[in-house]
Each structure stands twice: as structure tokens, then as C-alpha cells.
Image (cartoon, rainbow, N blue to C red):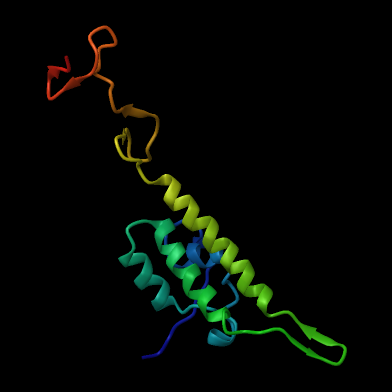
Length: 142
């Protein structure tokens, strides 16, 4: 199977390979696998299988982060390469995305209104009467 590497900045407004490459900073595709971290097929497969865009991005960032985890810092004479910093940058992005996804999930006991969430409408105890006390199964708790 031949891997393809493409990027068209005119398409970053639409969900797809170009937008994901832009968000990941994986836009240098001229030298194919030498410069790009992911091929088009990998990006398309993850976008298609993930439930949300942010989840797909998290999966791809994790993949990139793991590929950089094997790199070590090198120092030869006056030349110093801090390759570990690349891993740390991707790990930071991964942790931020993961935290953002965890915070966007609906907490227990709350049903959010609208497709993108919004202010909670239902909350635990909203039908309790402060004068008569809480109810259990429609009956007053005496």
C-alpha cells in the first residue's frame, strides 16, 4: 500500500485531512514520510472511527507523542540536540486535550441542553419541595 501525503491550506475550514494537519502542525508534506508525521490514510481512518473531532485529534496526538518517546538528547562536542523536548511538547498538548475532553463530558445527575451542551436544565433534587422535604419515588420522606 502506498501512503499519500497531501496538504491544501485552502481546505482548513472543512473537517478533514487538511484541517487536522493544520491543527497538528503537520503541514510539511513535500518529502512525504521524511517530513510529515502522519500519512493521509492514518488521519482519515482516525477521523472516521472517532466519535468527535477532538477525540480524533487526541488519538493522533497520542500517536505522535509515542513516536517521539524513543528519542533521546544528544551532545557531541559543541553540538547539542534536545530531542526530548519534542516529546514534552506533544505530551503537553495531549494532556491539555485529554483534560478538555474530560471536562466536556456530562457530569452524573445533569442533562445538558443543546447539541453543544449549555447551561444544565435538569439537576438532582430540582423537584424537592423545601417546605415538605425531599421525595423518594414520588412519596414524601417522612
